[in-house]
Amino acid sequence: MMLTSGGASHGFARTANGTFTAIDVPGASGTTPNFINVEGVVVGSYLDSAGTSHGFILNQGTYTTVNYPGAIGSGISSINDLGELSGFYCSDAACDASAVFHGFVRNRSGEFTAFDPPGATGSEPATVSLLGVVVRSYDTLSEPTCTTQCFGYVLSHGNYTTLQYPGSSFTFAGGGNIWNTVAGIYDDAAGDGHGFIEK
Image (cartoon, rainbow, N blue to C red; front, side, top):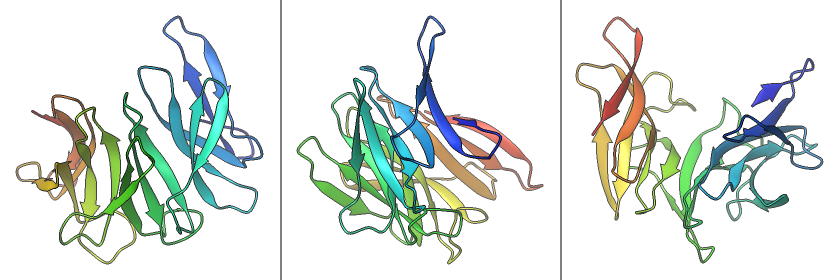
């Protein structure tokens, strides 16, 4: 993602040979790509002219909007190589920092399934693997964003596993791969941030 002088966000993709291609959803006031799969399909979020957040898929030059049914704001966080999506819907249209987020996945048939880990006040998936395993983080407080009380999670075949880096006050799982290796960040007791990999 890149920012213009006016603060609007624009997306880009970079090929292995170093070629950049701009990604801007037509008519959007801001575009944020979040993931690209092995086939070069890009997914992410954009804001329309009214400031409402939507998910998008960019496949071979064609943009498709994807919204969680009935949501006032939503976005897409990842797409695996089977075409399954992970994403979020929000308590406000812009899906900004004041919003409460909830996760969903969409299968290859276009069916949506919403979820939050048990005890969560909000959550947001980051990635869905080829095996359908979802990784990200969830909040257990009433605050709208995962800022002070945050745990990572792995959702596999309906079963949740909570991730908390040993001794940490904050654990955020950023994504996982087909081998269920998870990468993320954590805060130590002094509040300093660090990265981690959990295998």
